[in-house]
Length: 164
Image (cartoon, rainbow, N blue to C red; front, side, top):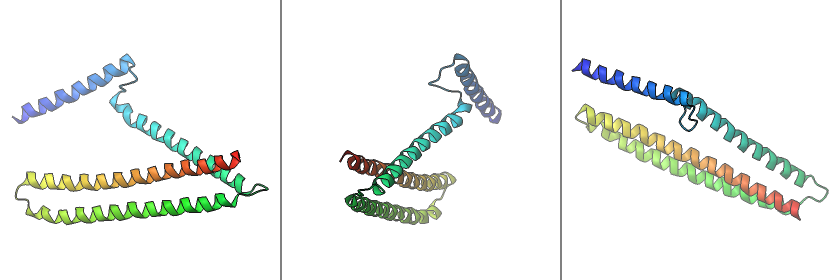
């Protein structure tokens, strides 16, 4: 039986390698070779981070230009402060919610010692790890959404200032 399982695993792995090689030979860009996926993801991540940094730089440059102009717009400063206050409130809300979810996850971890089989224990362990990952993903996504929202808000304020 062990030999049959090993043969099945080897056959499956070989089929995946063959499919990847076939995709690489056909040049189908929609389905890259599996070995290239991490590089493709890293490239996409790098591109998105670069665009976000460029937007941030442009907004900051325009904001400084607006504030150091011969006629500084002090209402822009007031609106900027309001946006920062709203961002801090949102940040506090996200952190509070994450801490609450972590507390719930920690409380559910106490039931792990009640598992009476290895399969139940593994299921509960996986639930804990995936729960932690889900909370972390939600928190990171919320932070990035907040950053993007601030970039859009600041960009709008500065663009409106230059229109006047």
